[in-house]
Image (cartoon, rainbow, N blue to C red; front, side, top):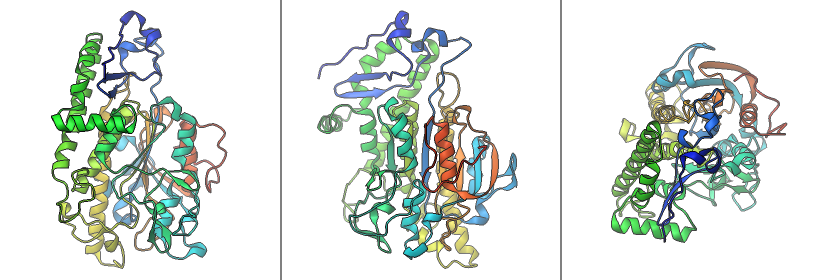
Length: 461
């Protein structure tokens, strides 16, 4: 494939490189999305009094099996609060957090449907709709809030939305008391009958974000790089050198840091592939995903950060694990399954301490993700985290009781100045969809009066 040379010009930056046009480095079937650079901003916005606004991003991260309540909720209230044990790793970004209590998901409760709280929790989380109880093909739910947002703003980026998971991908079969696996392994829904299947393989996500052309062409370029043991960056070095010569000092540093980050991430994915599950244990997709669950989460969070940094998408979901999953965590000394530990614990403090330890493990990976977003800068000098709204939580509160009221919820980021972080918000009991409706407003969604079972907006957030 013939390389396409970029046509850069300092004098034409205001017309040839409008702010809302994504720029790429190209070569041999590769298109690498770039961060926005000051050099190519319209001249009036560089050093002027009215810098161009950075894009807003939104992501929803779900955690399974509820949380250990005594270690989750902060002490204090509003701006005078202290993080509890589960959230200690979030201390460096405390000023960018809102911990919110009082949010419920009534449609995740049993009602007339009986068992299946885990499937209902996952299904209801971002839809606010009661799932039809079926293990067949007649699934029915509702459109999730991420897809409602993507439908209105998704045309501004290469990918309207990005759906990721660190768990299995299952579209059929029975997974929880008569509920289809589609409910348990998907949190993003394009329609009442169509889930947005998430990608679990870090390599495939990376290829999707930074490849070009149809699937066959991307696969060919990947196989060529594998054969020659070359990096995606090796295919676009000429264009990178040409671009670097056109950039100012600050942007040259930004380009170098970005390319170093891409190469580092690619190297980590390759390294993780080398230590996949042994063939005699499982050989479904050997070498594709890390055997270590923590490394899998880290890679997915880092890829999501890159996707936001490059403005490849502004809407994303990350299912860390499907509700009801029974993963053990030997890396932190917990060898029992997560789901099992949450059941029948009663007053067994040792058992609940292990649940809290798992909660802390999930939270530490979320904290690292937020710190990464905080370190990434947008052209106006603010951070990607400043311009993001990141939800972290789930639709089960206590894993033993399977209750769906006063749910764990963290909202991180400043939403481009539309949020007031650094608070512990104690709301009156209300649907979690009220929060999502308020977030959609701040993403610029128009004419959305209600969503799911919402009863209004949450007010100040």
